[in-house]
Image (cartoon, rainbow, N blue to C red; front, top):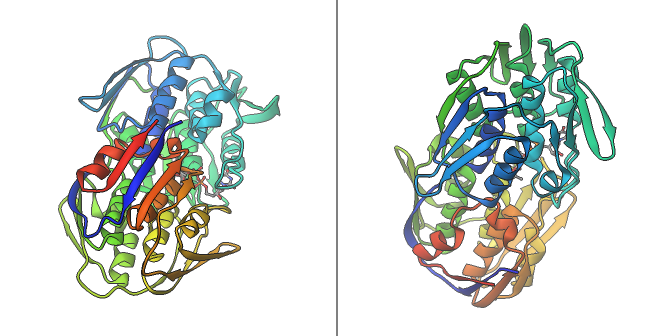
Length: 422
Ligand code: EPZ
């Protein structure tokens, strides 16, 4: 099993990182290809493991897929009807498999569709009750049988008024992908406005959909007849960008991330400035520099445009090296502090109480063997390891390879002493 070996400390890391396309935009965009009768062409594709899982999933449904890793493109061709069963083995490794439910419903409204219900994951229970309530409002009813959600709309989807009880990113994407082919008008309230959801809306509108914002978190959708072809360049990955800015932060260096819209990281940039980092944004790039005395802070996560939960583990690692007391409040997932015990093995002082982490920053950390448990925890452990004295070995790094493209290459390029060992 692949592991990473990191030797630290890497101080004053100074470099430029080219940010890849956003995994969490690419996955719904790929799933939306099910809506199209002909083909979808995507550019700036991050060929991370989750994208390959989605390729397998769409291929199992009958799509023909051509990829060019060199050109970072995917062409998805639908020259026949899709199969209507989404298997558990693919949904179990990638929760985003649930994103096929909406487009399958939209395209094959009166047919019985079977999508494996994803299990939990290390972040906590990942329910899809909001997705299913949304589909019900469009007249699609479901039952759970042998671990599969069986769903269909006997008389066809009809536009509806629906308000999400809480913000859900994939729930919003899923419902939109069903409603764009429903008969009549839909109004959805309390939707996710994460950049990745807006990227999907922009792509669907470019391809003929009629989706309009009529409020900050309210959209109006007028159902259309069909989708034929689509083409789109995926937005930069704001989570990857923030992760690499944290490499500069924890090593007190200077890191610039390119191909990322700074507007996607407003809350994170404000938080980094509060700590004392100098942040400079120019066009599609963000630079972090470390000149002043750094101070601890309190912050909490929330739906966009608040501080992204996916960016919290990385900042927790940075704060573990900033003397003083910082407090982090996680408001999205019930179990998002999995990096804490691993950082504590390196000597960090992090106490978890319910959905709060109290961090007492340390001057030094020491390398230790660690085990990753999820995608963003992997990067947080890497941050702790690169700023520790001595060697660290990180097991189960496959979690990280799900969402960070060319992770070892990009880290080595800016001077982190990391190698992958099988
Ligand atoms: C998306 O997951 C992202 N994944 C996650 O990124 C991200 O952490 C999360 O949004 C929050 O921003 C993708 O986009 C593929 P939610 P999603 O539905 O859509 C509860 C990463 O690191 N909930 O917004 O599954 C849920 O349990 C991944 O790239 C329900 O209770 O998250 C959670 O507590 C990790 N019922 C909260 O809402 C539902 O029907 C937010 O979940 C749906 C969600």
